[in-house]
Image (cartoon, rainbow, N blue to C red; front, side, top):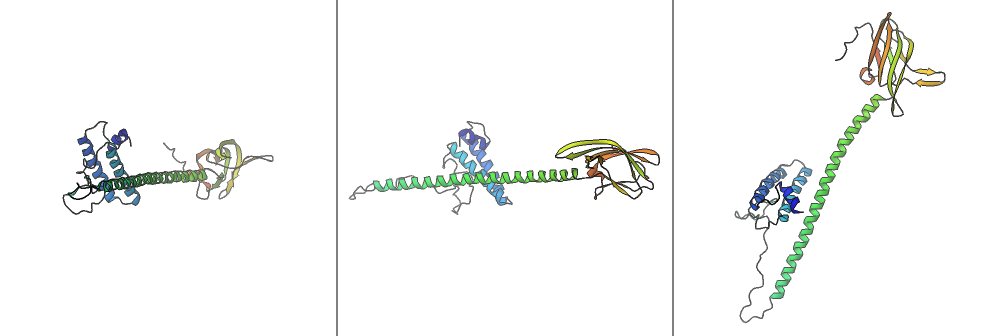
Length: 274
């Protein structure tokens, strides 16, 4: 992590003072730790733990060593019950384990000291690899969860579009006369979908629909089907009892559940929508 990234993680301007860094770390760590403790799902726990790990990485990138953050809260449980201990890890002794040679003893302790230092370096390297692997897989897990959430949103949107498409297609212009006398369809203008494209048909008619009957409208010229009756929106001119009436609308909204437009022209004309 670069210094710029570290300041970005902490939400501080570059070259902030050490005191500002420690105060900001305290604030963010306490917030993430509280969220981690109260997270209702495993995925949220992983997310907040990742935030805590990023804070620790930012502190290391800024050169704040273990002693500089000894008074900061820990991201995990501290198993030493002594009330004065606040550090996250027990620090290894910094003094050389090879004691000063005592009188009468040969000076052969130096090789043992080198061996201990090598062991500490190996353990530190392995721990660093473990931390890097945990951070890598934590990021991958968070990315996977984010992609799954995005997929769920896209799937819901696609289901909505499929339902809307099904409502807009495969509907036929069927009309049922609920009135007391015959109605005559004198003309229609329809929009419909065919082969994935919106098309329009308009033409004159002289179709009689007797009371109680249902008729499906279409237009065939010779052996060619000019319009097969498909409809998404419509406008029709109707003659009833010698008077002209008009009906228009969106088919899937106006038609009944069985896909039929019920017309009762004995009732008053519907009020126009604002």
